[in-house]
Image (cartoon, rainbow, N blue to C red; front, side, top):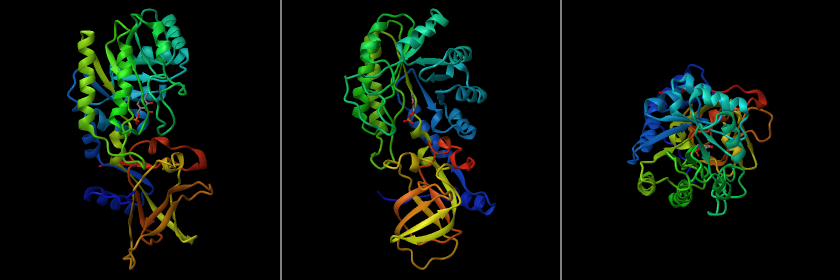
Length: 384
Ligand SMILES: Cc1ncc(COP(=O)(O)O)c(C=O)c1O
């Protein structure tokens, strides 16, 4: 895979400005790219529709402000994120809350917020009905053995081996139930094969016909591109095909069913950059080991998903370099943890302490996956 990272002029200038001020490591985001990605989804011609950004991909208030202004609503899977969505000015009706194994306390909190709730099992549905009789909710579905499931980043989200959602044989027990207002499915993540989405969506649409009061169908997220084994996502083809499925189901059910989507990764992945500074260089095993003033806990995807994570790299050299020929290189973090790498097995020009390292595709599941393990703080985040 080509390891080149292109950076536009305003981002490059801001990176220089911030590093000159001593701000390193940090994330920087390009607002225009985030907005453009939002518009790809809001531009899907089917109506009625709502696009809910999946907050787990990036929960920085600056990021949430941009997506809100671009017309996106919000999807959350925890009480903390529900509170953040409310603090950001989202109304309950603009929030979708889906999780699993909810306790009564969280059900009360979600009910009070007015968020649309999606439940994950028959017993969760029974619990909800016992707490709030006659109050409608959505149900998360799973294709069971109707579709051959794919392993996607982070495992299986559908199929009998997945722990999530109600399979058709469970959902049929709720056939004709009047208190289900929507069906939800999350096919998996980092997927660019449109036909795989459609194959799964067709199964969800069939299940919707069992329920008399369905108002919405939520196809979740999962849209991917820019990873090692993931080709470009064809938004135009997706847009046409999802619209056709929705028009078809609405005409069969004799009412306009709302389409809900929950994109996470695609909204910001190519809008974010992680920037740090070279603090040490070692040469070992015919490779250049580049040590930086940051740790994998601040930029965690390469550690969490070593097989798929792809983050192109650019180096800004402080001094003129004579030999720009790339050599085998890895970028390692400044802890003692043996797996503390920010990039491995790539080709980079010979570099020096003081040079700036920029890692791309850093806008989704990067800052939000920070952990306290190893003791490095969350990197600061800036927006231009
Ligand atoms: C239910 C649900 N919806 C949406 C998303 C966002 O997914 P993606 O970033 O793959 O679009 C997730 C991510 O885990 C999810 O679990």
